[in-house]
Every structure is written in structure tokens, then in C-alpha cells.
Length: 314
Ligand code: FAD
Image (cartoon, rainbow, N blue to C red; front, side):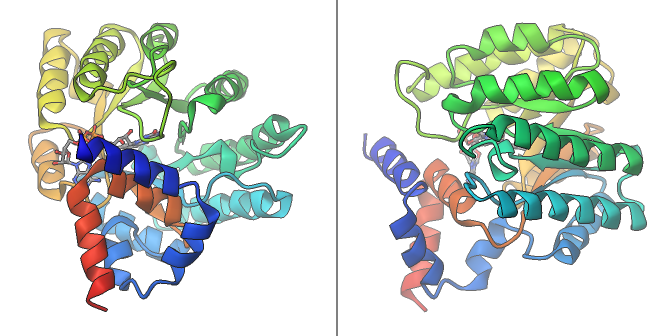
């Protein structure tokens, strides 16, 4: 299957430092990156979030970056989140959780040798404290499968003090249905997505249909449970099934939400919001866009063509 091969290839490149150098220096127009990334600065993130909130959507904001092996950079990323939460408070966006933040633990120290997990936990605590002061929440993104146990353990520790901290579970992992069962408890916020990394067959379903049926099983566990499910997908079939499951469970609109990525299916985002669903948009910003953009390319060959055409016509 050529598209599966392209996907695997692009996901391989998303971790390549050499290719990253070439692509970052390529004369890619700002428009290409800007289709998926809100901008570089806190002000850009606040501006995009204000527009989305004004249109009846909610946001979760991600300061781009991942896999840092540099303590200073992990500190700087933590500070960027503190600054962002301050700005959201000033703009009145944080109240009631209209704007929350998404954090990759590998960006705040998890990958540092030795006590990386502990450093990430301390940084995450600072971000959670700032989010609590701002009146909003934090969700931990999920990265490749080698980090899943560590991320769930940090989640567990954080929730002792900040019970509203959420995490992402990826339907492509074979373990996820069981993780959903563990986390489908009162007060627990779980974002369910398909999963965006290159994973071996031993831990992850490879076939698109198998991933989708796992998504349905996981969504069912979460929606039948006591927690707050966050259904993150652009897949029209999965959205319909999740909405039907929520209706069957007689869930109020305030007890779950749909989520999509910035710039992807914006009309569908508006439609779901207009239909009375809570609809949250994941808004990435910052200049470390390489890994994020490559994963979006891998999801859809058409995006890669859009990207290559823009490079070629420069
Ligand atoms: P797909 O089958 O990929 O897409 C279904 C349809 O949606 C496509 O046919 C197309 O019409 C549209 N579409 C999907 N992707 C694109 C795109 N890139 N460009 C244009 N159209 C597109 N993954 C993780 O591994 N960890 C995370 O922490 C994480 N957080 C996420 C948070 C949110 C809010 C969302 C929405 C996704 C997140 N993801 C994360 C990514 C996720 O795992 C998938 O890779 C991604 O959402 C694509 O899967 P899909 O469910 O949309 O289905």
C-alpha cells in the first residue's frame, strides 16, 4: 500500500535531525506552516484562540517542542506555558476552561537521562499550579509507546493535587482499551485519539480498520464510564458513532466534548459547535513546528502534496 509506505516514511523523517535541517531552511512559505500552526509567539496563540472562542469553540493550546535533551530548554518551555497562562487570564479566556493547555512531557524534561521523569513532573506541577490559578485545566499529550507508562505515572502523581489533569490515550495501541477502563472514573479527563507515531506491530494495530474499531471500543468504555471523554478525531464515521453512543448513554452535552486540530475540517468544527456540542480546537504555536507538521503530513498524502507544491513553486 503506497500511502501506508508514505506514512511510515514521513514518520521516520519526523525524527530525523538531518532532514529537519533541510526542511526548516527550505523556502517554505509561511502560509504552509500557518495552515496548521497559529504562529510563533504567545500573542499569536492568544489571537487565534480569541477568534476560535468568539466563534463558539473552545481551545487547548500547545507550545510546540518535543524530545528535548537540554534542561535549559525544558525550563524555557515551562516558562512559555506560565507566560501563556498569564496572557490567557488577562484576556479572560482561561475562565471556565474555555482555553486550556496541552503539554508534551518530553518537551519539559521527560527524555533527559537519569531523572528526566522527575524533572518533567516538577515542571508539570508548576504548569498545573498556574492553570489552577487561571481557573483552567491541563492535558498531557501522549507520545510514542516507550513513554506511555511514564506519562501515565506522572498523570497519577499530578492528579493527587490536581484531579482535573487529563491525558491522551491512543486507540492504535493494543493496551489502550484496558487503559480506558482504568481511567473511566469520576473526574478523569481522557482525550481519545487514533495515535500519530510510527509504532511496531507488537504494540500497535497497523491496519486502519483495526485502529477505527479499537477507537469505537475505547469510546464506548469512556462514554459508558464516569469520566469526561474528549473525542479527538476528524473521522466523520467515528464522530457519528461517538455522538450516537453519547446519546444512548443519555449524556448531557456538558459531560463530554469533541476535539480537532487547528486548521483541519474547520467547517465541521463549526457545525458540531452549532449543533450544541462542546468542540475544542488544539492550537499549536511556537517555532518548533517540524515534528508536528511531519505528523500532519503523514496523516494525509494530500497535505504532503500541498507542502511540496508550495516548496516547488517558491
Ligand atoms: P484520519 O483517518 O487520519 O482522518 C479522517 C479524516 O479527517 C480524513 O479523511 C480527512 O478528511 C481528515 N483529516 C485527518 N487528518 C488530516 C490532516 N492532517 N489534514 C487534513 N485533513 C485531515 N496523537 C498522538 O499520538 N498523541 C496526542 O497527544 C494527540 N493529540 C491530539 C489532539 C487532538 C485534539 C487531535 C484532534 C488529535 C491528536 N492526535 C494525537 C493525532 C491523532 O492521533 C491522529 O493522528 C489525527 O487526529 C488523525 O486521525 P483522525 O482520527 O482524524 O483520522
